[in-house]
Amino acid sequence: MRLHPRSRRGLRALTDPEAPSDGPVPWIVVGASEGRIALVSLDVAGRAVDRVLVDASSLREHVRRAGDTTRWVWSDTSHWYPSLIAAGVRVTRCHDLRLAHAILRDSALAFDTDALRRATEWDAAASVSDDGPSALFDLDPGSREAPHDIDAAVAEFERQRRVIGAGAPSLRLLVAAESVGALVAAEMHAAGVPWDGRVHDEILTAMLGERDSGGRPPARIVALAGEIRGLLGDPGASLDSQPKLLRALHRVGVAATSTSKWELKEYDHPVVAPLLEYKRLMRMYTANGWAWRDEWAPEGRFRPVYVPGGVVTGRWASSGGGALQLPRQLRPAVRADPGWTLVVADVAQLEPRVLAAMSRDAALADSARDTDLYEGIVSRGVVSTRSEAKFALLGAMYGATTGDSGRLVPALRRAYPRAMGLVDDAARVGEEGGVVSTWLGRSSPPPSPGWRAVQSRAGDPDATETDRTQARRIARDRGRFTRNFVVQGTAAEWALAWLGDLRARLALLPFVGDEDAAPLSGALHARQAHLAFFLHDEVIVHAPAAHAEKAAEAVRQAADAATRLLFGDIPLDFRLDLQVRVDAAKD
Image 1: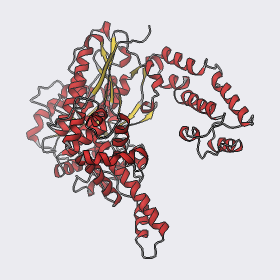
Image 2: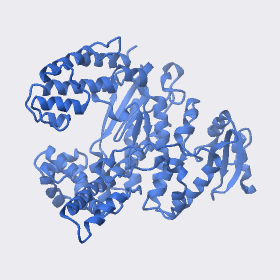
Image 3: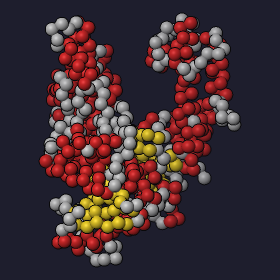
Image 4: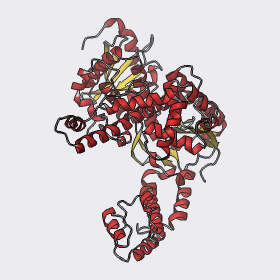
């Protein structure tokens, strides 16, 4: 690797912590080499100006001394950052090659991506490709890790820099936001959600009965199971196997095709009520019961594993702990440490507000200003009730064509033509087999070969009506997918900007003394307000009681900054429901 000596002085100061520094370098690439950690420093032109081998302790010192303007480039934040966090070392900025590769490889706003597509070793974070609306929520954790060696990292970073430089300017912001999101995810896992195990136990006991010492289901579930089997007339009926349960239901006249709550409620039979209650309690017992608490929330912290960009739209997913499906019944177990508070904030109607901002629909923005957006729609006389406004707007974004949503959407089109035109256009592109992109440039996956084959077959001269009907159906399905992709994906981008700005603001808040620390939050966060939880449009900040109001103000300011960053000066607020909770874990 050729070095450019004119830049050696500043880089040598960074790689030698005792040397004087004339300023940090823009990028330092981190990777494995010869059984150690290699640091390759790059100048503003992306040329390598230094390369050194260090051990883990030296890496921590280099990061401490690098300064806030240096961006650490590495294969995967979840691989490199946890050990730094454990040592109390904070990375201000990074470039996550794995996450950036997935964005840039597929973005319609990126150009000259052939080299990225050939670098298949980086496809561990490949996006989901699904033609149906369920693709919005599917998780693809990847079948392998990204390469961690230094030469692979340097080569991939060079490819990505070329693509970013040639693409739309928004891609630079998107990659930066995605990368800071990875830092936040790793930090929140390490800090954990403050969790009161005794409150959790009280909730479970009240719902399910006492915990069985032998690991069997608690008494209330056992009693319900016996009652249901009696009503089915089958003492050995399997209640946890859908095919077997459906056969038992059919024998007593309940002709359901699934065991979903919504379908079972349609039947007037004595077995339905206890069966629904059994399913509710069994779900709590198996998903978030005592075994879950022992594994995921021991000793005062719930530490889920977040997966940034785990959903095709850019939304986060989780691969451990079920953080994104935490039942509301367990929320009381989220308790601040003694002397600390929880600042809880969620955005009211995030996706509809994002739609108003993207479309520059002044009428919809006016309906949302300083008020509940759905109430604002009612006050303009578009529909009669808040529930109608909600059904209509969500129906427009998700492509509902039947029921109340389908009936009310035409009224929205008349009142908010720009907003409705944006999602209608996205649907039309999807139905025609095209690709749509979010505000910053994350693009939807293209149709699968199977989808294209069905459409092609429907156009043949000898196509049957069944062929044409199937083609229209899957085209509409894809249109519903792309309709919501642009909104949900842009909402995810706004949330990343909110997280990144909030993280930076919280890092500026004062530290507390050791006597007021929260040691369970780890070396990096024990003495300062920090992010503890994130779910799509909600954050929880764990803050020293003395700094609770400052943390709350940081949450508000970060939301305003995220709106300006993405959408500029727009007469639209992203309204927060913000609470400062003073309840603390029991001693």
